[in-house]
Amino acid sequence: MSEYIYVKLLKKWGGFKVGDVVRFGTSKGEGRIAKGEGIKVEKPKEIETAAMKRAAAVDVKAKLKKKADAEKKAKAKAKAKAKAKAKAKAKAKKGG
Image: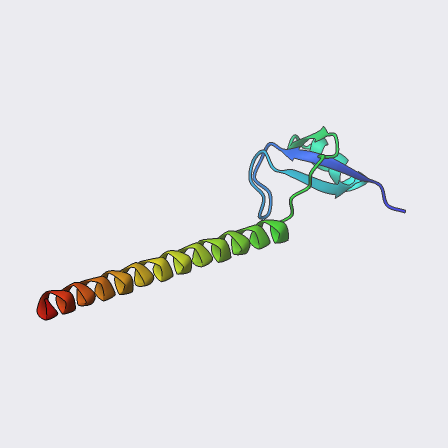
């Protein structure tokens, strides 16, 4: 079974930025630490992968769309109600 260590990057590496915590196999991680590219840290309590970030972004986008659709529907309903009220008022004025 492979052992893993977590390294907080001090230099940009691959698609990762400075400060990102990356999981490496023990030998590769220790090599990065020895080169001064990162420091060893404890396993993060919550690991957020790139896939998790994309899923969260999609979820937020869907929620925003749902909210916009609801607002659009509410505006259309209010407009229809105002139009019906104006029509009833005109009818009452005409008939009275």
